[in-house]
Image: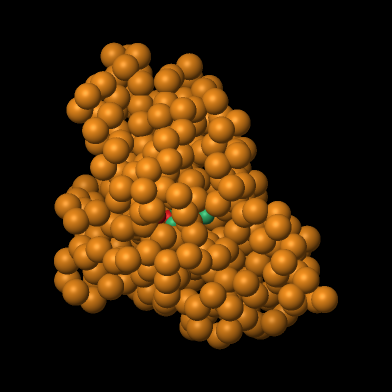
Length: 323
Ligand SMILES: *Cc1c(COP(=O)(O)O)cnc(C)c1O
């Protein structure tokens, strides 16, 4: 796997420090007591843009030439990547056009609009949004910023692994939501290069487990998307996937496909026990542990990947659970 190197991840760490700060790793008293293991939460929800996507967006955009920056950028996204691209573009004074499908929840659309980027709602899948983004590239010369299948973006996500190892060198198990595989590619390069025995686990939604199904098939496939609490885990991996398919194949030890109840239980647990609102994709690790879906080592890190959720959604889940 020579496509992304650990050295590039260290370079990314330095580059993005102008735009974003490291996030805290907190010890979970409740989950540790429940599992008899030492369980920590990597609080990526506390990024300025409410998700880890700022790491990849910042590394990629800061690597563009002055000429590319002056022509502007475009991306297609289930929401969080677009929010991070919009934010970074605003910081750097770059014009950005964000293409999203009509499945992106209103909370994310509102935050997207607030970044000042131009928003285009196209079709009902990430693939539709991608096609439009490519058109903008061809017609107007905008640079397409890919949300996961790009070495610079993957290296940006890999910086999270450096922080985890710095804070908890004894870590032996890492759980995170898996969609396009950019996050797991970055974590895989960092964590597995430095700690080959560590277990890296991917958690996907049963309503669109494209990476899982693609690995089973042996090549990238396309799936029909359905609504899910874990909307950030929707989106294809691209028929012409260049990096993340093989990086996930090489580095991810296990992928679990989760039902809606697990995302709901993870979200309500986090609010009830830790007093923090997170989105479904980010609650996948907690849900998987609560429902004993994964075998844990002794020092576990759960990536709390983001918090872009409609307030009405979390309120309804809390009401269903606690009355
Ligand atoms: C993007 C995202 C993921 C999945 O990351 P991939 O690189 O697409 O696998 C998980 N959680 C949240 C909150 C996300 O925004």
